[in-house]
Image (tube, rainbow, N blue to C red; front, side, top):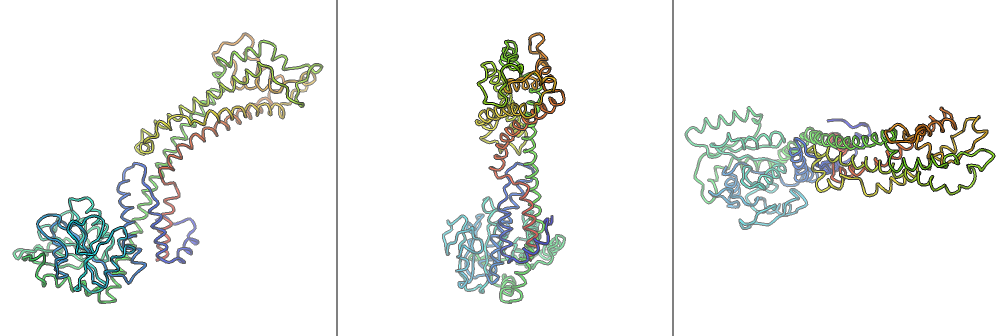
Length: 574
């Protein structure tokens, strides 16, 4: 088990809490886990999770809160092993159906002393997920409810539960049998001389051993001839499987009448059970042993569950990295497109040529004796060609941003669909997530417009002109910002046609006005600002995929840590 980061604080806190509160916290942590992503071992992990929850709800928490509650003995075994017959014999009445049709126990039957009936009828305690009905009840009663039968033969403080067969043809019987066994103070495994070597029997016994249950084993229908060899062989098998400490009982082959064996056939089992119940020390030892052994198993079962959760976290990280890689690729694509001149085509190129070739560019640079560039005064309305070039640059950049975002979204969906873990997340959402969000065009317009204003501010605050040029020239901030954008976007580096002699106009003009060092600094800041703004747009787009992970309930890295912490707290509280 991985210890928590601050053992001192955790140990002090856990030691100060009652055991039932620590167990309730552990139960909440286990219940909060969701195995959403398809991965090897996920089905087994879900089963382990449900087994832990069932055992906490059905046995551990009720037993910790009420140590004086009646003991529950669950009889289990394969079909036709004689569980119902043994229950009937122990209570001296036909309370559970027997017969040749299998399975005969259609509803779980719980037999208890009349003084304990109210306890078992209260759904707040043991097996709280099951309804209750007071018997006798018709055989048609089925489902997740217990039939409570009263018997004066049983001592107070003891209840027998005839569990469904572990190899029943009905799937819900398997689940009920497992749940009842997890709620038992004592397991009674009933098998026959003909079937004691069956795999189902040993799966049940191994489960009892691994869960640390107090265990009794009944070998029934032992034939007169060769019976000793069968009993000896079964005992040897129990020893080889670490089960030699279990209480062992033998019932010979005999006639069944009225659903019961001759009374003397069950006397040994009856004495063992009543002896435990009526002996205060023996009862306390059974509770201590079974409860302690069950809690001991949490040392490995919960961390094993946490490891499975870590696998889910790792898959989440992998899927998240796929998203990051796709949008990082979109940003790199945008970086390249804003450097290599590919943006300066079509409408942008036409508006630049219109601006640079008709005198507007020259008029943007004024001699000091003429009209000023209005650098410090109220901004005048820009000429139409300046506005057109600014709009074309903005539209071209927005189109690049949107196209790259579309490709990134398609890329993420394709990557997720290639992985089993991602397929479930995309069910019903692939089309939606496979394209840019509806809000992106509006956000892109706002971001690009803000970047264009940032270029103007850069020119105003950092565009200190060379001293020799500054004596004679002032300039229009907005017009010069467009020249800088055209230069940043790599004018003259693409295969787009340009007018002769104009390919280096932005670079020559900017260097002449600002100097090479200042221009490099301003260009770096302008690029960094653009990258930051577009990066934020793509981060917002990527959030949609993170929301898909969160919305599906995929655990994050805090979940296994909390499981380890809760397990550690339990060890301290014990």
